[in-house]
Amino acid sequence: MSPNQPKTPPRQVRIGDTWYDFDAAAKSMGTERAAVIRELIDWYIREPGAKLPERPNRNVVDVARAARQKEEA
Image 1 (spheres, helix red, strand yellow):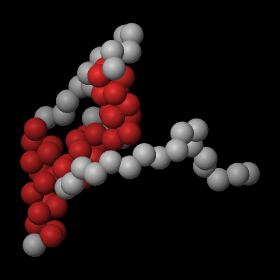
Image 2: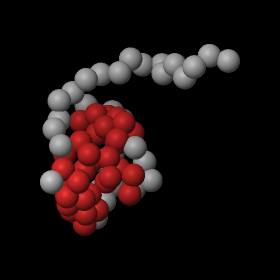
Image 3: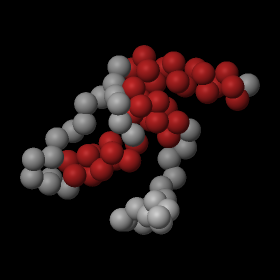
């Protein structure tokens, strides 16, 4: 059996610490960052039927950020 080989190569984007908040927000919605990014890209380039992904409650981001900042302190 071969290891997991994605069909597309990874891309690099510099985002900063909000990347971790984004991860917590995506997980709270039962998804992952990559899926949300793909949805946003499809919506942005006006793919037929593409819609903006649902956003999580802001509290999820506030809690994740506070926990990260406490850990860094």
